[in-house]
Amino acid sequence: MRCLFLIMLTVFSIFSSAGFSEAQFAPALYVFGDSLVDVGNNNYLPLSLAKANHPHYGIDFANHKPTGRFSNGKNAADFIAEKLGLPTSPPYLFLVSKDNKNNVSFMDGVSFASAGAGIFDGTDERFKQSIPLTKQVDYYTFVHGQMTQEAGAAALQKHLSKSIFAVVIGSNDIFGYFEKSDLRKKSTPQQYVDSMVFSLKVQLQRFYDHGARKFEFVGLGAPGCCPAFRLKNQTECFVEINYWSAKYNEGLQSMLKEWQSENKDIRYSYFDTYAALIHLTQNPASYGFTEVKAACCGLGELKAKAPCLPVSGLCSNREDHIFWDQFHPTEAASRIFVERIFNGPSTYTSPITLKQLVAA
Image 1 (cartoon, one colour):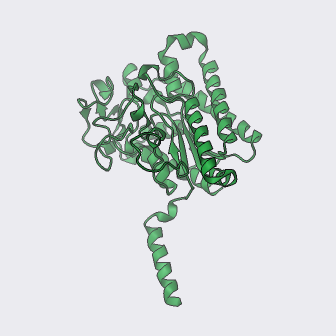
Image 2: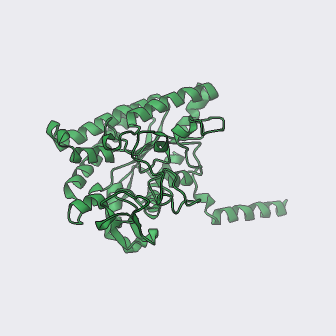
Image 3: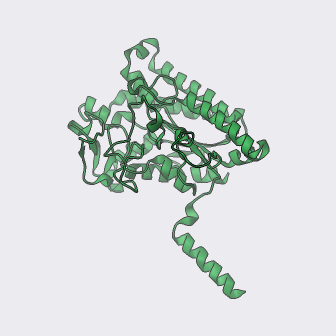
């Protein structure tokens, strides 16, 4: 008996030292958002121009081929799933496509995220086609119905109440406001970001009404520091768009507190991407980065005059760049962000970390 105990203790120690003890298990991860967490949905949109289905995307992925992720490798959705002890949630449009030869079960998690998507419909005009948040929630309500038939209402609610719902959206709405003069004529920046917050709350309530209880919210970063906007501002961060992104984040945090007071059984974690990105750009050497302004893949000044294309120039060391292309982080940067989403510190995560959210 003592021998068996020692064997079990040794095995536990090996697993712990290998890092398995850090993974916090949730039954499923449901992902909603834009290109920061799209894992391939846009590959199934015939009209979309926002597709990462060509080189050099995926160059550092397992098979070195494009996967539909706007990254050289994994993105935040992959790393969040890893932290939860789960495989990456597959794209919804793949699961319901003829390419999927397996039986469809949505109980293990689904990604509805789509490049170009926004809180508002129509943010994808320059990309021709995406799945806006309203449509993503529509798809989820359909999935909820399918899972109810599969598991029964009571069992499904138990499952969903422990699952994580990750929401990463809003950047394209901000981009749209500063790129479209007609939007600026219709509303002030404050009115616009207030409307973003209000519209998001409407969709969150739809999640809640269909079983969601635990949420990971990722706030807007500092989009004015992306290579595309630095290019427009003589390589410096575009202050105005950063300011209104921060204002949106303030409104989002206030709304989340109010929404939780209205629905007492909600638990959530909020990640301050803005502060985390600014800290990263101001202290790059501490994290192994040497390039904070230019993209790794692109053309022209800062490699930001064109998207990442097969003919684009490519940096030799993706680990030392914060930005992969005009707008998106490298795999290395995404890994750092998700580490902070999961473990903190409280400088960036509130009121709790994702790790604490899983355990709540």
